[in-house]
Length: 245
Ligand SMILES: [Zn+2]
Image (cartoon, rainbow, N blue to C red; front, side, top):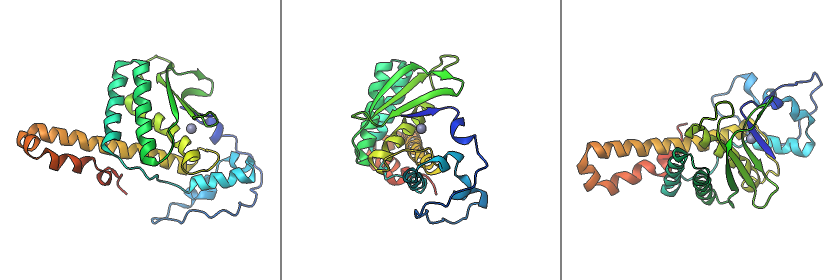
């Protein structure tokens, strides 16, 4: 089970002054220009718990760390379902939100070529001394399960749509670690968070393009009626949805 909390203290604290073992012989990702500062390179950013993993899990961790992007194609169906999820969140109806979240996951899973996980949306986030629980992923159930919460723990306010979307994508990335990358485990590596950000950015950029296109059409009725089919696909296609490099 993978828990996504607002604080991930368990993975970042508790460094022990133990000698570093020899790194497993796994090919590291080729360095990309510009070179990051030395402190940001792979060996230095490994958390303390990495050294407590089995050799097999260390290989999985490093494999995860080396994949920054995913083969997402932002289709019209995907974007329509992002819009439907936002609309469902406004209703604050958990069943409607669950349905919309499932439909978005189905569309994303289709374009990514994996079997979708099953999603369930619940009310107020659970909370304990370790922080506030945003989402959970259960990789061993069939189908794998994602649980998300729609209200904040302290004030019971609806979770902001962008935050909800990011949590949904976070749990999807866990699912993809098994279903697409076949890692056999899923760790919160630097590469994991790069993949999460890659997907979120792609969706938000595509959404932004749609909003701007709609505003343009509203300002220029001729474009809306006369050239809609020429303009609309250009702002929502996969190419323009790629995040800037
Ligand atoms: Zn997680």
